[in-house]
Amino acid sequence: MALHEIYGHQALTTRLAEGIAAGRFPQVAMVQGPPGVGKQRIALWAAQALLCGNGPGMPCKTCPSCKQAQNLSHPDIHWFFPIPRPKAADHEKQVAEAQELLGNAIAERRENAIYGRSDGMLGHPVASMRLLKRKVSMKPYSGRMKAIIIGNAERLVIQESSQESANSLLKVLEEPPNDTSIILTTSQPGSILPTIKSRMIPIRVGRLSDDEVKAFLQNIVPDAPTGRTLEKITLLSEGSPGNAVTRIQESGQKSGAAERFLTATARGSSAWAGEAFGQPTFAARGAFSEMLDDIALVFRERLASGNASELDTKNALKALGVVAEIKEGTETNVNPQLATAALALKLEKLI
Picture 1: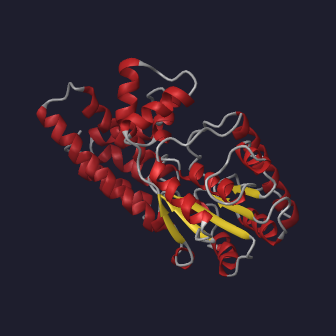
Picture 2: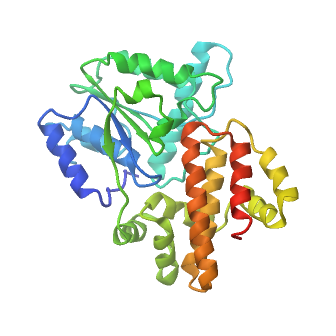
Picture 3: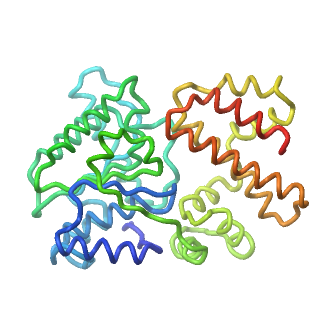
């Protein structure tokens, strides 16, 4: 199954194509924007445009290079995204394991281009960065250049006790080969090391309109809902096709962590204290962040139901503001235990 077409972002892709054709596309770029708006798809499109056999610019979609890029089989496009930490002890075996994990995941995405959000506990281990450096040092296989894409770049340190994986990438960014374009994607630019961000040119990806999200669901997502259910999911997606897909895949069910937290918060501090201290101290950008998304979804659903009283509507809006404030802290390595306690204190009177 080929990659699906890009929905929305016409102004962005036109501007990028013009820059690519003129040789002005940055050698190291960071595609940033809200979760689920298509940042990695934009990065893959940019790689396809850079390597197009009919010249860099808007992808022609017909040359062998474009077809390989569409099928996620181009030998000069290397896509890295969060994976489990390799279990092998030997460094060489770790790299081989990382390559196998990435290869298997890309094969799955080739079969099903619609995939959900990445598990919050996955990351970019050092083995992936060692593999990346090897890819960077290689000559292009079939064209004039190669493209490296690093999705969810905020996960560069999540699985490590230090910043070794991020520092390993930094060495590559300092002097990338002339035949290599490196594109990072992130929804949490504040979590990227300043030394990395200083070397990247930002490319901002915005939210889609409701009509664009709806068209994406109707044309791309198998068994997408219809009627009022489609309208509701489109509204709750907040301009993010990824959020809409997650809603469909989860069939409206929030994570157990979110449900436990809200139930405990309603019962008071003696109940929610256990939830706060039970949070892993290292998962602010992973499972904790996802729990915040699911809590926000509860209050968005209340607003979308049309049955909320005026007081409930005001409380839901206040609650969303509280969750958004805590979510900002996940970009600065906030302690999830303290953040959960702060969230519960602020939400007690709103639920």
